[in-house]
Image (tube, each protein chain N blue to C red):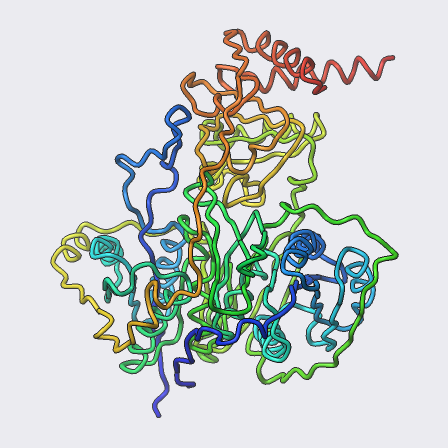
Length: 274
Length: 349
């Protein structure tokens, strides 16, 4: 066997509704959805950047995969425009309604398929999604594939000769640096790096690029294993929570000093001493 | 190079009645028991009573008897110490191995784990290995005594709605509990509890992830603080220095919205909201925060809320008791002046 160089990296991303624009109208008590665009899940952007920067340093390739509706292809075009060479859309009605178990299974299955063509060295996911915030898909993929993992990673170094990854994990009030031999799975922290911008040339190329769609039948994955059928959990009910609207005593005093004094007074009336 | 191979899938459990007991996992670091280990005993007791079963806490490590004692007094009916020095530090693989082996051996119907970063690192791995589901980061945990189901609820759609997740045909039903949501039970020294110790084997070759360095990051006492001065997009990087000065003077801490954290003005440990910390201080001052639903989800239980925002239409005012229409960067320095005068005045007396 010849000595391998470079890194064959797979990055898993998800398209989510733009979270910052998610606002509740206190009067109608409904979620304002109009004009809320779909974006790449923010930490997934960091995952893509981590993949691209490792490829810049050591050579190899970056393949980005996403599971989602046909429209998720726009997320893949976006990362191609930034320099990703390969992208695959995993899209099938049978994938719909999946909880984190079948989601990580489908992604792992696709990675396993890629691995048969060319051995995969590193799998990168975002630490969690803004729309469901479970942080379970990365570890789920690692378990399905029996790989080591490092979650909530703030920085990652690779020793290419030893083929060892060294990841700094951020925990509550603590950090740790862990090492594991490749292949393995890491989940990238939000803001761990600054995602590069798409180049003009990249955008042109991304538009023209044909992106393969893999369906359940292409993966040869049994339908009862995936989607809602393959999900151990169910949503039993969704309740709208009590409104938190308060009656607001408004201070419109233009002079900052007077406004500050009025605020301290208003606080005193409510039993708060600053 | 090791070949990547697929393992098995989640198989529904045939005889659900064989699975009994509510388990919790205790988390500890550097000899200290994490608060979440006690917090999860509160929902665990409720669930165990509704399912007419016992609460059993697992604690992994060596020399953890004092932690076991504390848990015993805080509501567990049984504590199982899985003893091995290699388990003193959390590591994904041995923790997954040891816990899943015991799950297959003893068949608990419920497993509750803290939704800490390590708790989430672990819970998904256990769920996939055992072939069951997991509800992440729950804020309400209850049970249906008739259907014998865990009812694990978590905020959805930016915290506006609460989704209740069930896991009807797979066991154990796993949920992770959000940090700082459930109260720590009052210790009861007379509480009866069986402490069981099992010496477990850990195959060192199975530990593929080695910890080569570790350290602590000073934790921001957001959840313990009575006063929080929080800033958002309207404050800017320099503004956070002013907020810090006010917070220090008032004996509080600085909080932040996601927008401010994403902008890189302040570290993530300060983030309040659905993806940050949930807080309930006496006083919450929101400076230049627009009032996105995810932010409100993290501070709605504050006793008194003040909003300072130059946009009179800012949603934050709707969630506040006192609102000041104005530039936080001008008003906060005046608050600082008033407080400073008060302090020097008090010192003279």
